[in-house]
Image (tube, rainbow, N blue to C red; front, side, top):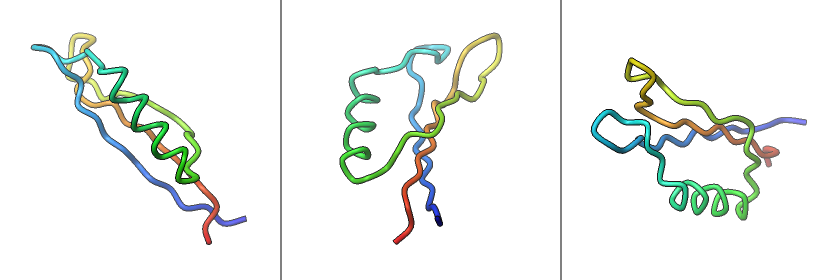
Length: 64
């Protein structure tokens, strides 16, 4: 089976980052799920000292 992938980036909020708008994240996950995208992984990028800069979600779905 062939797959296609999609990467979604969300900014962490707050003065030093690290805060995630869980309602916004959930809405985006549900929207992509309804279009056939399956969540594969979620990770953050570090802004230093344990604070997150970006939340990155990786999705896949069958190509075709």
